[in-house]
Image 1 (tube, rainbow, N blue to C red):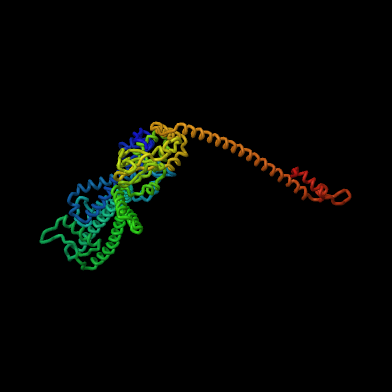
Image 2 (tube, rainbow, N blue to C red):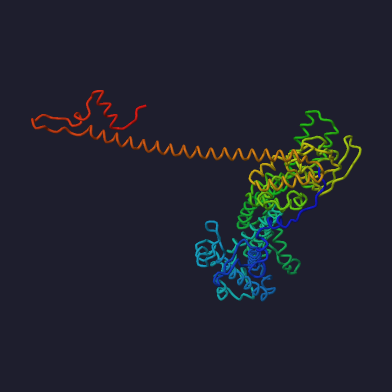
Length: 602
């Protein structure tokens, strides 16, 4: 077992793990990062993958939510409209400006074509106008405010609905808010919590709209005309806008959640409206309960899976009558795994990613770990990428032996967390304590000839408490080294240097093994050369055989043509067969035919 080695210069690892992303992050500054991907000949091109585009969608979503809440509210609550009409006008037209800017941005958003981002402005605009979103964008910006001339002043409301109802087309921009929600759900680290929040936002907006409709129907029937409608006057005093809105919101909540306990309807219109409300409420309530129940289940999915595995182990131990002491240790191990968030199966999670991203994530996660291994300094980038993917995390309980003296070394270990003690055979004497960053067993997995320990462990290593160790097996290392012969030479040479330093290398045996290895390589090279020569000769013979076959087929074809020629007349008027004159049906003629074909007899 080797001593703890100082960490190498991680310059390469840092460069390899980040690649060219550092340059991209430096360019992600200023207005270009906030919105634009690049400028093509003075034309704006928007990259939808940049954070600036996400922030812009957030601004647009605020404007959309403002319209969804206040246009409907101000259309029925005239006190709200008359409270600050100038402020409402400023906010309305500020949202219109945001809508117009968003239409420009939307028309220049890049999209992928054959895996590449399209940056030609003409193509981007053509793609935008072919989509359904462009129609909605145009409809949402139609100058319906001109209807104020017919409906009434935008700064004063004297009847329901108020003039702001002409701006209802502003609600058609909903798709942009949906895009913002989708991006947020993909980027957040708490997707289930965000989904619950999104459902609550939808519910509050629906309750708000339903309350406004209830207020408008009460106005049409007559405020205070019966016990079901809204009352604006109580004890001779006009009720405030706050009370009116809270009362309608409360009524809408009770109705849509099917709780009831509201004043019963008294006339036909009220009965019809309440029936429709209850039908809608049943659908909304079922949808909300189903969504939230599914989200809560997903939030606890990892805990449920972990608990299932632990219960299965408990049942197995009971069935096999495992001792209480060992059962308690197993349960404590499970508790440690869950409390330290190590119950996640990293292999199954990483399998969904391509090899390049898996390597980058693994190097980013295990960068500090690789710094501790001296023999891996300045290795080939591809070899490091292969090795870092093969590191496996193992957790040892207090008192567990990682290795014992005399065991064949099949793994190397890097201590991530915890303390290990190098102890005597009886476990009573502790020679040294290893902490985070310690490395041992790296030489034994290299199979260096002349190692006086015979690739066996030279000490007992025991876990003091709970310890997290990264393990690299011998088979994984050599599988990776098969594709990197230069890296293999470098690692073996560094291993030999470490053994020489500790006086554990028999140089004569090592030199003899190298000579035998070199002679074996020479023999293999000679065999390869002989095999290449045989393959060349075989290919030549095959070509000659193919050529002779073609020649024979051509000669057979000429013979068949002579055989099928028509007969001709002689001078005496008799018919003479040309072919028969040439080839007779005697054995001698057969031999002549054989000579004509020039086929050698075998």
